[in-house]
Image 1 (tube, rainbow, N blue to C red):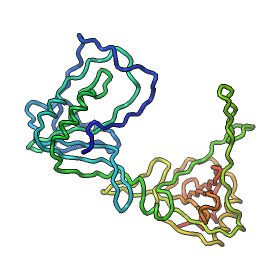
Image 2 (cartoon, rainbow, N blue to C red):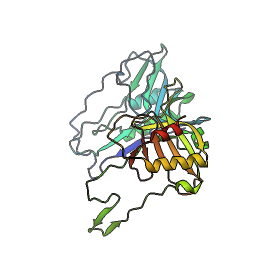
Image 3 (tube, helix red, strand yellow):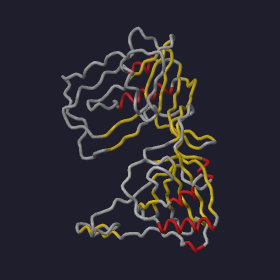
Image 4 (tube, rainbow, N blue to C red):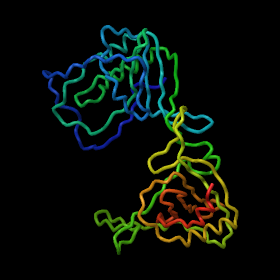
Length: 336
C-alpha cells in the first residue's frame, strides 16, 4: 500500500525559520463546505487541481460511501514505454476515521516566518451513493501546509480501507520503448549556444579567488571527417497528434521520437561535407515540427551528434552548439 502522506517537497530556500509564532488565542478561518459535482475531476496529472472544483469540508447532507485518491506524478510502463500521468484509486470500508481526520481544523495563521517550500500530495475525494463527488483539502498548519499529525492519521485510515479499484490515467510518454530499441533519445530539442560579446572566450569561467577554483573548458567532441568512411544513424523527431489514450510528450522546444533511418557511408560522407560548408544562421524564431539527430557510426567513435531542423528555421547545430543555415541539399538528403 502506498503511503497517503507521500509528497514531493521542492525546497526553494533553507534559511527561513519554521512556522512558529502562532498564538493560542488566535483561530484560523473555518473551512467552507465543498460543492458536490457529478463527476470525479482529478487534476491535470501535473499536480494542478481543477480550478473549477470548489474543495472544502464534507457537507452534512453528503453521505460518503467511497474514498478516491488521485496521485499526480505517477508512472506506468507498458509495451510503448514509460508513461507519466495520474493514478486514481477507489477505497471502500469504514470511512469514519478518515472523515474525522480531514474534519480537523486548520491551525491559526503563523505570525512568524514560514519556509519557502511547496507541498504536493494526492487529491482526496469522496463519493456518495447518488454518484456525486466532493474534494477535501488537508487541514493545514499556520503556514498553509498539511498538518503532519493529520497526514499520519490519513495514512493510517486509508491503510485500514479496502482498495477496490486502481486505474492509471495517461498523461505523456516520457521514455519511448521504440526509441530505446533504436538507440535514439525519446525526445530531441535544439540547444543553441548563446553568442557572447566580442573578446569573451566561450566555454571558460574566470578564477574564483575565494575558493581558488579554476574552470577548465572541455572542447566539444569532434565530428568525423568526410573521408573517414562512417555511416550515420538518423533519429527522427516530429510533432505528435493528440490521442485519447494519452499525449506523447512534446515539451516546448522538444519533439518526440518518430522513427529511425540510416545513411550509408557515401551518404554520410556527403552529409558531413554539407554540414562543414553550412553558413551562419540568421535570426529566426519559428519552431520546427520535424528534426533529425545524426549519430556517426560506430557510436563509440566520438559521441558527437548533429541536429538538423527539417522545417521551421531549418538550422543545423553541431557538437559546438552553434547554429548554421542547413543547405537545401542536406535537407533533401535527410527528408523522410
